[in-house]
Length: 556
Image 1: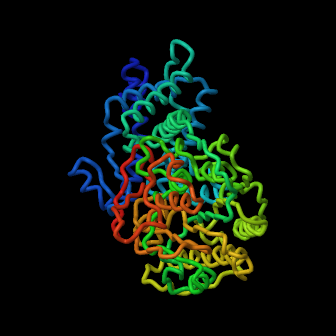
Image 2: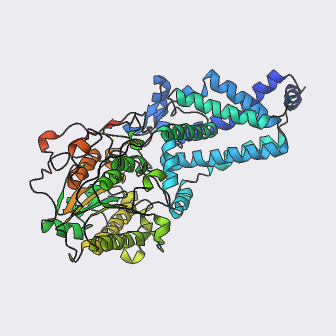
Image 3: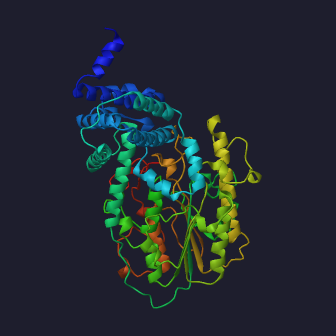
């Protein structure tokens, strides 16, 4: 009997042997290709992982990969065996559905590994909901990995040519979905969502985590402010949250290229103060913005205070301000806000409402809108999210605005020259487009207006050998600008090492919110803090869950 006859005999034998065979097929498809990726991107670390038996951390900032934890757990293998048996046992219609599910998981997981050196996470899901469609399509193009097609092809061929006995009863679809959900629930509740496992189940496990996280978030109830200030405010407060701006690439912060001429001019005229050592709360936009809007105190946010604390809009309404939320960065409500929070806003505008022709024009339109509202008088509280300089950087400014094409000031690898030039050009265009429109001629009176300017996070621009510009773990991804512009209180100590969490109480001080009205014991305000008040600062990396993960200590 030759090899093929033995194989045919084996295939026709008992259910137990078939399940074993299909499990091996599954492992061949999934484990082998995952390990191909592992060797491709992490070959130099494999020996350490093998001997330590606990995984590896790439350059101290990469994902903590523990290949054996998920792949060799008996529980996962048993579920995988049953899923594979059901997959190959199903009718043609179900096989098409399984193929689609498998293909989606493979494309997403291999794409994220190709672009960001890690698997898709819950935080990635929420980020994807907040970005404009154009940026989403660009990201898909950048993330695409041809390796996914290999996996999909192999799986498709097995679905076509491998046969197995049909289940005794119908309901295979319900069973397989239930197993996926149960597997995800099991992993989530053990709080081990990041261990390495087969790419496709890991993807659907992340979606299960999204559902469970959303359920927990929905259970949180926003606290309100039962207070009405007796007098109308006589000032304006503008809270500008930029996108992907790293402080040390601003000429305001000493960068050799003149990337922020308007801000530089304001500083020279004494209308701007800034904190040289400010950092963000997280390396991903969703987590950072939620912190900025809700005023949480601690990381991680174990009590889900971003959904419970009164937001800045609640305090502004209580103090009599007209409230405006202008968001050029997203077509959907995000930043930990919900539809109920919209009730207290006098104006909400998102990227769809703005109808800007191109991404590079959005910030100029946003600046004009802010200027018009400020010129209408005082009593305005305005929060805005700029489009900023999100990657791909070359799409954040028009070709006509390109200034730098030569070697950047710092010593960098040749492969990063074009990237940094695009980034600096993007900052110059977006900064001057916005601040020149809003404040350039200084025709706008700033005596009664205070502007708070920061960014959601910084960027990794090649200093760390990692493919991700943000949502990683490096310190460069949390180095952000922080400035007060216009009607700025005197005797501010900018030697204080500021953090995102200090901005919320600062705005409450600018509003004049009484201490007895504040529902939370917030951190120290930037108006009060001195260099002696500096404490250890932590931030949430992109591969760590915002509610249960481990924050990183910022060490410059």
